[in-house]
Length: 109
Image (cartoon, rainbow, N blue to C red; front, top):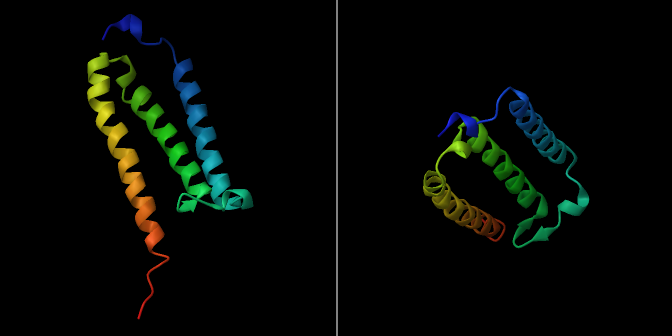
């Protein structure tokens, strides 16, 4: 990693801060308001859950890339860390969403 690859000053950190703040505010607002058009089932769960998952992944990307300085590392290191995550997160998300759908079908005797 060379010094000329990294941004100078603090402007970049403020840009990332404001982006993360906006994404978090949208998540909180959606959690409080729970818009009716997002409460419809799609693929076994409500659309709002998918929106929360996508927004959380956006926040995770910016935190890892900028605050953990992964963006300025070698491409092979980035891929060796990112590829397992890109495979595991969708797989685990799929399992959680599918298994959560079965909770509605189970009745206590």
